Structures are given as structure tokens and as C-alpha cells.
Length: 233
Image (cartoon, rainbow, N blue to C red; front, side, top):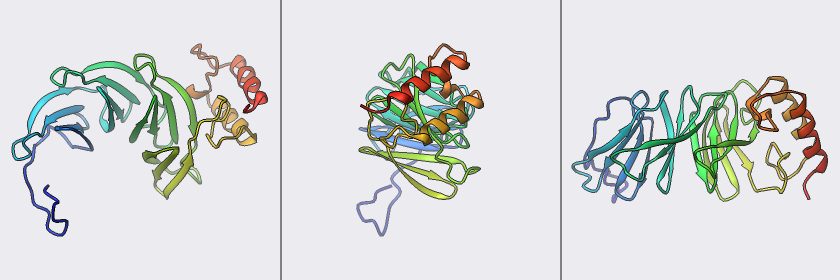
């Protein structure tokens, strides 16, 4: 759409993707589209009157949302969490890595080496993507608010996350604390963090695999307790 005159936007062109286009990110003259059952669609929009398909990638589950940073696309999928795609060659995108969030990934935003995933009934997941071939959990916030509501979208501005859920907007402080035990990312290690970990650990949530050995057991509880007791320097 030509929006040079906001009161009268004008259609310039269109491209009919194979499925429902749920989300779009524009970088330069390229459009990246989360196209549900048809995964990632990459479109050349250098001539907006005649967009052309450059390439596509079939995600293992419905592509619901995405963000793009550099030559990497981060796709939130319905059943299988975060898919990380190399788009350095838009004609041949390739999988780099993945991180399976417990909840459906309705929204994703990337800030530096962190991906923030709005994971439906599982709240907000924070994922370390510094090594895109081996992403790992950094933390979790129960951004559902009042429980039972789905976390549906997230946008990052500086050190603040703006999270959309079915009750409205949540605004979270995501400024870094020099400690891993700050689960709710409020800059403090306190009882709320301990309770959040205990709930996740009791539910055998992957985020509570504190020693990251693939097994959730008493050793994770002891490891977290040590970090929690250390607090923030």
C-alpha cells in the first residue's frame, strides 16, 4: 500500500501466498512472511507493483510469527516452538536450529542474542540465540496475567518488553541482571523467582532443567537454589 497520503492509502500490488499470511517483516527490498502451513515465504518487493517469490522454507508446524535479524529468520511455529533459519541465500533458506517452547509460539521478537517468544498459555519464553545452532532457555515470565489467558505477541523496545495477551497489554522490564536466577527479569532475585522456578520444576517444564542435561530432577532444584541464594551481585 502507498501510504504517502495516510487518509487515502492506495494499493500498489499484491502477492497471493499459498496459505494464510499471519505475519510479515520487511528488510530492505525483501518481505519475509509467516504463511501458516506453507512456512516461510520470501518475496522480492523491490518493485512493489510486481512482487516475486525468491524462496521458501517448509517449517515443521504452522508458521505463526517471525522476526528477522541480519541473515537469520526466527519463526514462531504453532506446535514446535522457535525455528531458526539461515536466509543469507534467500533462494535457499536452511534450518540452523530450533527450540521447542512448551506453548504455541504466537509471537517472536529478537533483541541482540535473545529471542522473546509469546508462547500462548506458557507465557513469555526468553531464549539465548547467541549460537543459533544450539539455542537454550534463559528464563520465563508468566505473562498470561490472572492465569488462563494466552500470550499472543511481543515487541521489544530497549530494555522493555511489551506483551499482548487476551486481557490486554503487559509491560515487562527485561534489563539484564548479572544473575541467572532472576526468572521474572525484574532485576531482583526474590521469592517470586523461587516460586516461579518451583512451579516450573514441579510441572517438569524444560525451563527448569537448570543444569541443562536433558533431565529434570533434584539436581536442577539444588543448582537453582545455589544461584538463587547467590542473588544479584
